[in-house]
Length: 493
Image (cartoon, rainbow, N blue to C red; front, side, top):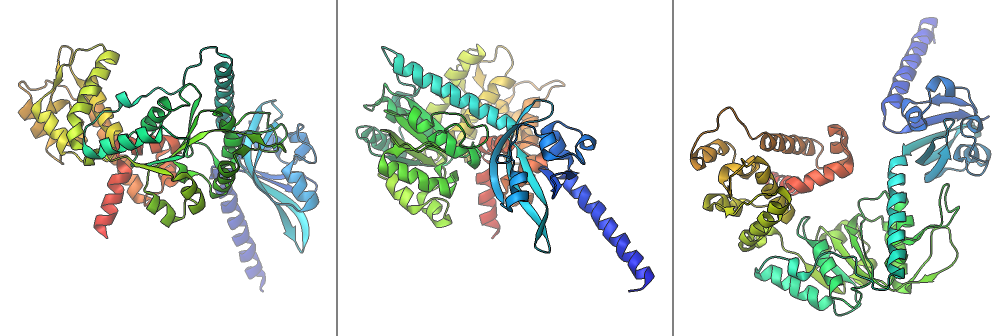
């Protein structure tokens, strides 16, 4: 290669290295690279944010100077350098130089050149806030469980009863009838239906008429907790199970003698599904890192927001676990399948919001009710509840009847909202808009556009909108966007 060629190659390599470093500094995970002696050679902005340190004070420093609370065994970077071991998605809790307790999920890999270890790289995702919340929830549940055991007159911990479930449509009444029968036995129950159809309300109602009614009712959404923490939440942990782990009961132990409701079971990691199956078959639970088995007696109610056939076909639920749980199957109908119940449900929400808003709304106009009956309600009862709550926010003081112009804009076909407004209002509004309605409509449209852009990928959509995944999931449920997107995708094929 010529001298000019060498210079061009060096320039190209330097340019690539600069771009590579820029990429590592803008990604949303921490990256820490050390040489074979454990000294820091690269430390990106996100890792500096996680540790609460400045990059300048870290470069060149040894890992044990940076993290004095770690040992040869607990430092995944040291283990990678000394033994060549990879560590995949391990929970690590440590104290940084500013004496701040940090919890992260780490993946650590040794770096090789010509067969020899020349360094190691660690990729970290900060879960400190999640872990703190997890600890608080687990501790609170443990306190409630202990209080319940010590109480001379224990009461159940479920709120809803069958009398709270509203509707007389045949499909809904069939589901309720089966639920009441399921409450008479200790057999597992599987409830499935779209998001917002009241699956947890049915689960609580089953508990409240069962023999376990005075025992704990524990509900856990399997999609709400990172998979790395879910095993400890389910089965409990022993001190030393992982860095920072404490002796804690899991929700199986906390629900012992009562009912455990596992919502969105189809979101549970397949490896954890196998462990869950073992617990159900053996009737025993072993804490993470523990060696002792403990007998448990828990009625299991599981729920999914998709049909069992779809979950099995997509391979997101183990067939052996499904058939173990699917003793009694309850299908919750969507609101579009029980529209005759809408007037009664609307009246329920009016009474509910009258109490919280200190108002005296007496009912809803015929036109407004017809508008509610025409809408498909992809978000089901939850979406209907949000819609009625919004009307209470936009009604003027003294108004006692929900009219068409109070309803959310998205209930109207494109371009018809202003027309409906004008027809239903006796006097025009002067220099006033329903700002909450407009903002909700704008938010809904923005989420739909991003959701379509990323082909229904929730993580990428949340990142693009700069909101948390759980926050996006809530808004998707609120506006029924996943249903709209799915329907639109099928029609376009």
